Length: 235
Image (cartoon, rainbow, N blue to C red; front, top):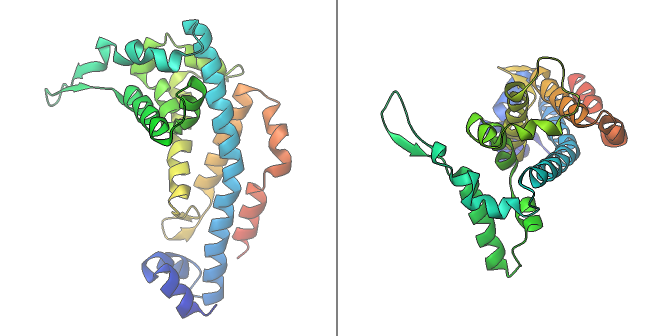
């Protein structure tokens, strides 16, 4: 593909950053753009594995906590509507009610109903976004759940708790959203730099280790992130 055609397909506003970072060398611009896509693609297996294990471990933990395998449905009238989720902003004086978890479950139920599927806890769980599960580590829900979500991490480093886990989870969630929206992950400012991308990769590995140290071994044969970054750094 000729460079002018490449630019027309993907728009100059998108390509300019890659073009400038490669010294305006046309073939390198295309190579870098493709390399960014390749690295983004290589994150999906690891993100998918982390998300499935993460939500399953939380479900197991909260099922025991509530002594209810259907907690995700039944807690719509439990902790998800606790009075403490209504609060006043000190700066503005405005009253806000946090019903994020309740709204996400209701949306999932509506989607299942429209598709003609039966509403079950398993289906509701699989419908939830990563944001739903990470919200359980925000202070308000974490307190209502008596800190149970942290129990899924059996090998946390000394001094690590809710805040450190929540920071890692939110970093990964924001990065996941970026690659899902085809945003570049190969820059720091105007320079090609994978420092942030490698930081997110390490966060994924850390979370898997904290859940169970054998999990990184399970993904070794499908983990191509570092290899693809090294290729991109050679462009």
